[in-house]
Image (cartoon, rainbow, N blue to C red):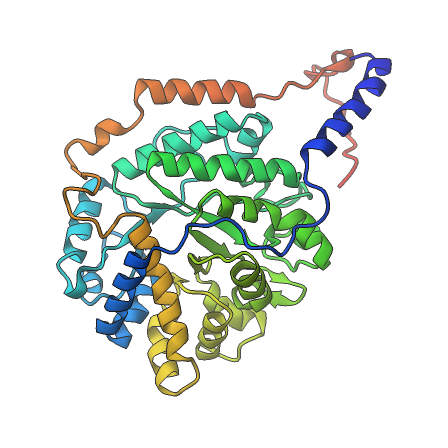
Length: 413
């Protein structure tokens, strides 16, 4: 584009963005969410009344599947969510086993599907580069369709971390630097996954992409206004689109680890936004509270995480090791355990996991692979990839470098 046209186009584009974007910081009003269903709440109360403390704590654990996975964990009711299933036959076996255990509480099966299940779509940064909500929704839908056909019910994504430092290693997993685009990305991806049969997990709450110097897991220092203007809006949009699960971030935010931060997890997420779904930790993040220096030992780390609003411990197993004792010692209130378990059960009811067998999606290991990489799904992925391509102008035929210079200056952050 000639320079004089660029000067004319820039103000027009800016005006269009200002008209489209919301004005002012995110407001402390209750976000849209599913209305409480009295029938579901009655069933939750009934289950809580019949469950032992150990069974309740089991629902607060997300474990990982591996070839040596012990089915005794299922028989003992020692977990509520299981991740990283490898094939439909394994999932079907464990799903059916869980329904035979006392109370018959179903498991949630999860996996981290960053940009597709078997059919791969562009990475999230590429999806955002389409500026096309329908393309993003299609990617989410096909991911959810393939995943749910294999028995999965929860995607451990999308990642909604705003990133403005190209040195950060996970930039490609998120929607980029603009909060307005990230909000639209969140809405389209959450709805696409849901239409395909999988629930979304919004991660990492919050500020993970603002790590100092772009160093992963590094500290984050944000004013309240920047937090609300830039980093919170994508999560709010995802919740308003129907997301039922939020993952707390590893990083510290203004000195407080995300896994032990009542300001973000309780004051904002629960009280301001009215979120009544699950908050889970990131992988082994409860144990990391000791490394952060905010807990003297693993037992105190559990106490801080659960009191800050983390309902589910991913991978560390520390909730299972210490929560029963903390409750019996009076250091964690039984009401907090019931609150967390209610949220886990509520999500399971909303996902239809308690429905009779004839109403649940059928999982047939023999036919499940046929739902993968269908011709129309692969064509959809090709089409979205075309839309995601970004063409840069090669002024002066600089590229390719047919005679590479001995030195190249790389300028900027």
